Image (cartoon, rainbow, N blue to C red; front, side):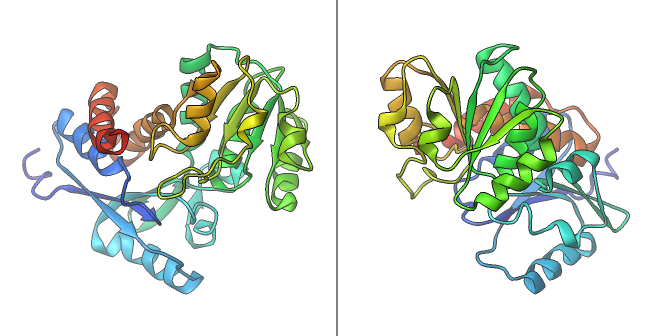
Length: 285
């Protein structure tokens, strides 16, 4: 075992901006807790074109990476450069986890499994709907697939690019009740739940994806953003008495699933939770 660990497992995150990511802390702490050593490298690449992205991904195996996570804005754009996709990643059309084995890159999506488990933890086994889902990009698509697992939920999607929302809705029809809305007001009107699947509200941005006047006390509101943990959207929702779920739960649950894919070991949840909280504490100050 000592020989196998002569050098640390090399992991990373591809995206931009990612300086505030808690992923290095979570994965390195999880590895230590199960007796492994890991180095998790932030690969902050802004505005990469397809040639740069292909080059970056083709270098992962030769450099010795066991896997990388992928975040905004590359969750969909990496697909053409992978050797294989898990059924879940193929269905979603977005990848947040790439496993490197024997020179081959396989894309997975742990945002879906992570969000579904986080939602149950926060709001119980039968979250109520209809649910307004803002964003049909990489995270939005994963959240839509996760919401489709709950029977009886109507998913109301809205995106700045209506064609993206239509494509997700088309893929889910027959599996869930999905409606593409013209605007945020239509999506939120009468909705019981609201999910932000966009980067709006992530530092340094201080905006809200939804006009705060549309929030109501009886709603539950979830945000995929965790830097800061309390986004303007969640702060306003909490202030009026709505139930809330920060991006902490999604971040931890998707990381637990990704760690298992990277290492073949079950990740220790307590170690990841402690590492996440330490990593984001300066942002909450």
